[in-house]
Amino acid sequence: MGIWRTAFRPHCQGLFVDDGVLYAQRDASDPAFRLLATQEEQNDYLEPIPVPLANARVFLDIEVGSRRALTVPAGATVHRPSVPPRTRGDKYYTISIYSDDNVFVGYPGSSSEARNIFRAIEKLVKSARDNS
Image (tube, rainbow, N blue to C red; front, side):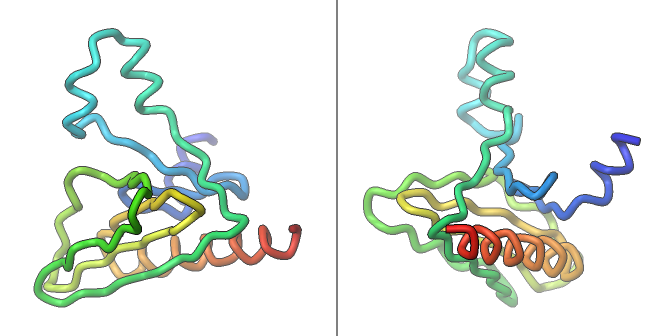
């Protein structure tokens, strides 16, 4: 049952939604991962990070031809995959979540993946605003 739940949850490279919580996921291909010496450090690095959504702003960017550089506020910490996924056409999708002093970035590989994760994140942000 766990594999089906994982397969059908809203996700993209770098972000996923599970049980009503948005997580940022680091990848083993990140350069910082290769510098870690012990298995425990590597496991801690790959542990998903819950994204705070109380004051979050969510953006879905669709670029044609190439990706534009991400705009990051001064002093913000960026969590994003080191290598964006390959896309089939000439459209590139980027989901950015600006939350307090952090920026979380995910790269959907297709329009349907972008739509699904963006809608799921919007619902979570709306719910977080309603509860605060």
